[in-house]
Amino acid sequence: MAKPRSQFNKALKFSISIAVITLVLAAIFSVISSSILSGVHWFLGIIIVFLIVFLGVFFDTLGVAATAAVEKPFHAMASEKVYGAKEAVLIVRNADRFASFCNDVVGDISGVISGTASALVVLQLAQVLGAGDGSFIQITVNVIMTSIVAALTVGGKAMGKYLGIYHTTSIIIVVGKAIALIERHTKIKVFSKNKK
Image 1: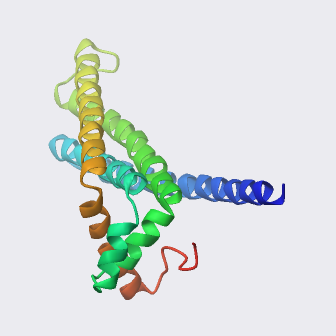
Image 2: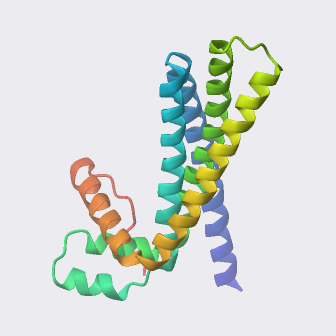
């Protein structure tokens, strides 16, 4: 009974830490996006919204790739001294946490922020069109913008899931190289090396 309890405690600790990280990151991203969007042209605002959507789709793809990956090809790469292969192995071994961060933290935050950013763009566009609050024009623009963002998010994540499942090794080795580069230049360890 000790082992399941220990696993539960680890899962609880991770859940709390990821919730705190999400709280902080959501606040930071929300302030940054609101500050940027409040001072830019509505067209540039739309581009920023699409970039936020793309960010969510991108990280969702990484999370799917991590959960679909297997260690074997990365061990072969590591034996051939391929840069980033050891980090790729650690991604696979920590797939649950990696996917949780990519899909739930970054992915969900991107969804929330893109919704908030869309609302700001709609207000700016409505002002340009001379429409007041609650007017038919504002409601129409809001519906169009919301529909486009939702379609891009869902369609993008569907394509991302395909790529994550069928191009797993290619994706994870690139992420492994990126993590190796980050660790080399910042000396920050993304993963614990001792996880079996």
